[in-house]
Amino acid sequence: MSLPPPEQDTHIWELKNFSMAEVACTCPHCLRIDPKGLSFMSWRTMIMIQKSRDHLGGPIYFNSGCRCWFHNKIVGGISNSSHLFTIGEPGERRLTTAGDVTVVNPRERRVMTSSEQYALRQSLSEGGFTRFGRSQWFIHIDNDPRKVPKVEWFY
Ligand SMILES: [Zn+2]
Ligand SMILES: [Zn+2]
Image 1 (cartoon, protein in one colour):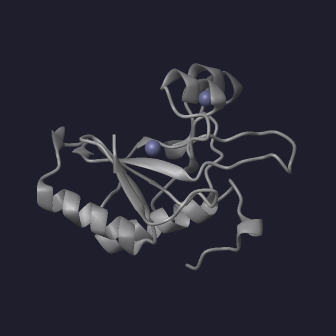
Image 2 (tube, helix red, strand yellow; image 1 turned 90 degrees about the vertical axis):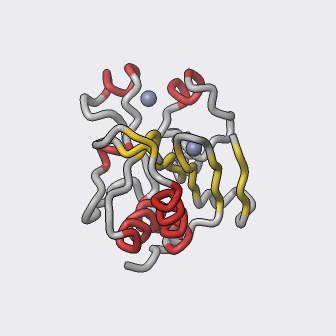
């Protein structure tokens, strides 16, 4: 699956292994609007995550995906966070282009081994991501067009 051009990006999508609900903002504010939360996650970003998953051949789970301004504020996210979506006028509308992929195996409730983390990190590169934020608990990835590519940092 190739990336649609930026102007065709949308928050409505269907992918083999990911649902819009699992990357939605599920803060109390968003849950009041929709019981499934609000998902304004970029389709382009999710295609890259699906590619990463195909390469990995195993599940990828999120700690965090979409954040409304309220949720972003609560978690102390930066004001130009790539997790942030805005539902303003069409010209100002911004989709989420980031995900925090967990390195804690949610089924076995343990931190992934270093080789599992390596495989995950490698797959995210294969999916086309070039922006990585590392923490002990997750790998932040985004393809935010407003930000400089080919960087890696630590939280
Ligand atoms: Zn929210
Ligand atoms: Zn993040």
